[in-house]
Length: 104
Length: 178
Image 1 (cartoon, chains in turn purple, red):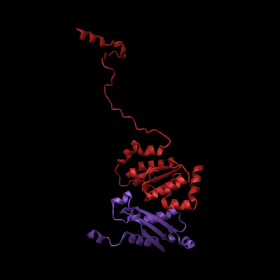
Image 2 (cartoon, chains in turn yellow, red; image 1 turned 90 degrees about the vertical axis):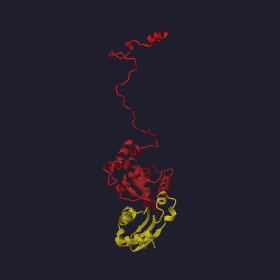
Image 3 (cartoon, rainbow over the protein chains, first blue to last red; image 1 turned 180 degrees about the horizontal axis):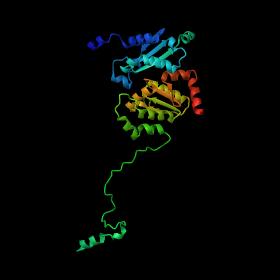
Image 4 (tube, one colour; image 1 turned 30 degrees about the vertical axis):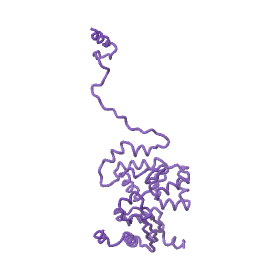
């Protein structure tokens, strides 16, 4: 555990944050690791390290005028590497800056 | 003596056999015996559908044995084209309609049930090739995946959002009426 832990500099949540900020120019980002809510899940039992399910709330100007499907695809494309390496599911709330402001 | 008589009585006159004139003492048998295996055709009940027949039939398993770097082979793509249009509403999920095995999949099932629309569900846990192929086909890395009228609608979040703002009901009505 010790030697493996040393090679992972950032936790997955931090890596996700960094990627979304750089790729999607996010103005607001909230990332929560909710793997514990899914710990009985068939897939999670195989890799018992957690960091498999995340809630992502992101506000980005790139989402302007895009359908929900497009926005989610942008997020998924940005996190393609994570999805290959054990990230299992994302709950995404993706808003454009106008929508985020309107909500408040 | 008696056994000879018994033997005589079992010899059937040749006229009862085929007209080829060959005297056979055994019932007609083909010269080469092919093992007969009936083609698997599951009964088409109201719960079974075209999608299930395509996906779980023998031809699909042969496709699954082709090794490919991309999970989405051309054959799988054609099959998926057929599956997503086989029913107006198709949900690729983890588990089945009656026994979902994932919270997100369950949410979508419950939403669709509450809207009283007929929908088809496919359990992607049963078939790893299908699961990976679908991710490429839909360009979507997670499940559940909802298709309405052959078009990808979204995953759980999108479905919930659309349900809340009425968009899902609109789409479904359009699909049902067409």
